[in-house]
Length: 254
View 1 (tube, helix red, strand yellow):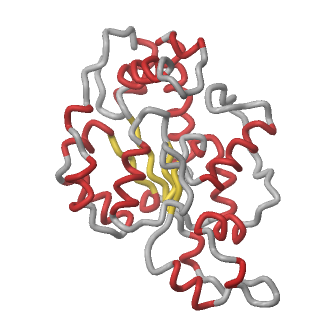
View 2 (cartoon, one colour):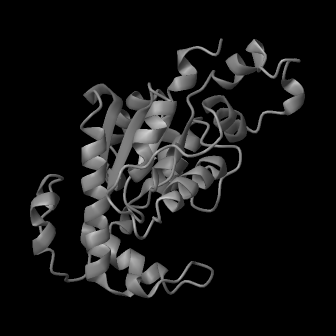
């Protein structure tokens, strides 16, 4: 038996360009296994792939996430996802295909988790697979997110989409992600959810202590190398009246 620790990954959700990658890096540096094979955005490739499949199965994508229920549509079981995430050598399996107990215990000496903003819309499916998971929701000022999406759209090598040049589109996308995250996390016990404001994270202090305690690691060492307070740039002048109420829930003003 794998035990309950196997069912307790740390799942990082939130709108793109909101600091989810930074949180994933902090956790990785502190000893949380965020995946043996991660892309440049710190996303565990096995979970990223399944997220993309689940969204595509209902005609969705990260930039067009319709607010409908997404079912877990992969043939991968929880144990298969775990094995792929850790890249466990098949030779370490017993004859009947079950991981050896010592191997699992060794892998689970430290917390593990995965980050992908798409999980904001597939979280319900992941919670069915890992019913004891904890969730970290990272949120950032919508004006800053809108600006960042627009700037990234001009970066060579990134996927270009004309819609991302429109800050109003970007703000509405932020709204969809944040509302979905609030809906999903409201169904979980408070002890299993932590909401992090990106701007507050850059200041360090108590929020790092709280995050470390939530995950079960010490973040002080990784903080010094990863945090750059000047990242919290003031957003451009954008009309945010349509999301003012939602912003206020996180202490943001227009």
